[in-house]
Length: 242
Image (cartoon, rainbow, N blue to C red):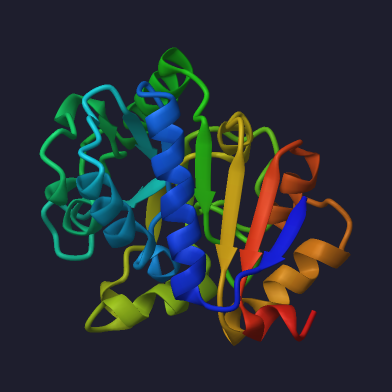
């Protein structure tokens, strides 16, 4: 696990966008694992800008998102479907809808949806690059503390701390979904390369714990110590206080 301080969110986001661009240029059939949340809001617009500047053909690129809220229609303003289309997919004409994979959180049979998504992950293959953020309690995806390291895509209950953290994007905390469909820790670990981004004081303790505590299911992100190719990218705020 390599930790690099790229000083601020903008430089870090530029770095990740460039890494994604280079990967697709070298490997047109790239599989990307994508994260959402406030950490990634600068990554995808920059990535789109670079894709268009280089006239990159995306027709063979596959993407898999980590998660989606239960109960939200895809076109809901706070769904991760909307997030990804607004920040990335709507800005490049060669993305293929059939190659964009985002769990559905508004289906009648959520367990079946989770199984379908996991089977798609396994059938299409290992992501060449998985992007991750980290929750204040050390979660990755929506894999909360106590999640089994063997977990795969499933329906999860969100903790109160996660609901509170995500409430900044909703009018009222009561509007924040209480569940999500999320890739599991085992699903995430199948990626060939992982980049985790973390910025600001609110993420400092989670990164400290990730770097200093032993591997434990009580700290879901700690499983990344068992992966051979992980980069942790932080800003000054975190790095100077580690």
